[in-house]
Length: 352
Image 1 (cartoon, rainbow, N blue to C red):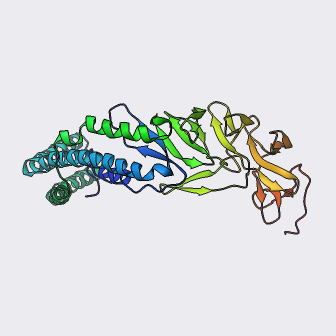
Image 2 (cartoon, one colour; image 1 turned 45 degrees about the vertical axis):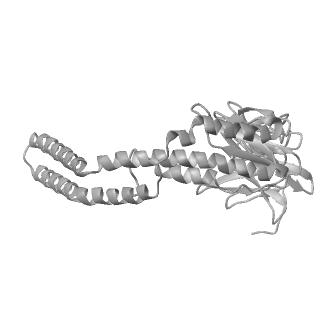
Image 3 (cartoon, rainbow, N blue to C red; image 1 turned 60 degrees about the vertical axis):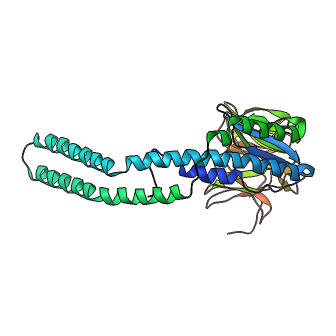
């Protein structure tokens, strides 16, 4: 059985193992930790490569405690489920289905006699007969799956993974972290160009390599510096660099739109755009300078801006504007494409 209804404990085991995976080190590493007390969100610490050996020892100790806790809780849940899928549980489920069949047939009995009523009555009986016949097979498979899962789990006494023990390891990890502390965030991403995106609730900001919050958590979403784009595909983030050399990134300000900030949080491109040609503001290096196609919030139309945030081509196009690498010019999309420079002067490419 792939799905056990209200019980979702199986993924918890996998999650615990993910926490225990080996940490790959760069000069500075942002590390996410599992919560250790109710009310915590995500514990984030910044550690240096020079402390990798000491960190790995504590990290393994911490994950061992968490694994004991999750194994014990999963085994308890398995036992509860085994009780619900025993012979008594099977008889109760069959009785529930019989009662539902009776209710359905009673409602059908109130309808005038007709071929449709006869057909619905027949189909109702067939459907419920099939479900009742399948129940023993389903219950048996669940019991086998639970027994196999149970054999992999070990019960530990709560004292073996107590909060006090986890707190003790957490304090030693905090002392080893840059700045001597861990931080609470809802979400976090890895360091890119000296900044790591972090979130509190649904609002994003950035910390530096000292763990300081240098850009407040006030944005609905942010890309990574240098505007490293995040595309979520099949649960995996594919990272693609753009051509931007400046320490700027795209951010969304709730109620205003999309703009750009620098590494210190200063607004460098105003928040007056929306996703359109691209999912972020991308500046392209051209023979005329650096320009970005944008989708204007106020007009709903497409234009092109320069690095100062001002329009070189006013937003008057209903068609998306993109940068064409092959012809090294901007242009519209679709069958009747038109190519032009960042100021709107038409360019003949020789294309049909």
